Length: 116
Image 1 (cartoon, rainbow, N blue to C red):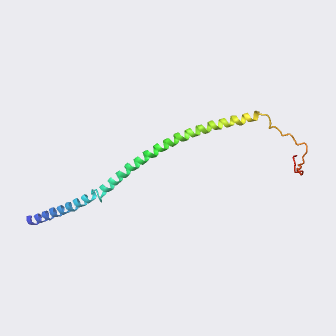
Image 2: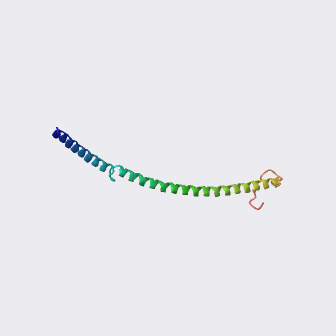
Image 3: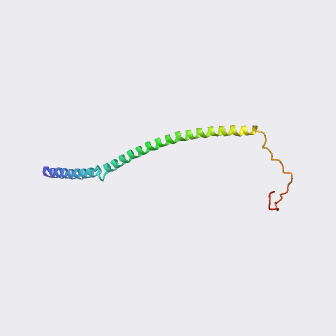
């Protein structure tokens, strides 16, 4: 009976050792930096860094655009105010001067070849 128990114990130990070997190989492939999850984590980390840099650049560009648009908007409002004042001052002027009507409404051509 002891011999049978020892054989089962040895078989169980060999099976557990084989299981540990397979598990070790799988874990090694899982954490491999080239092909496994470790590589995927490294690639994702690099992409997050790139996206952070891009986001920072986009934010600074947006801030400069807002500053520029604010300045242009203020200049446009000032120009609009000046134009309103100019139009208002034109309403204060008297009407357009009228041209005197010609005495004769007909056109005569110089047919004499000399001076008119």
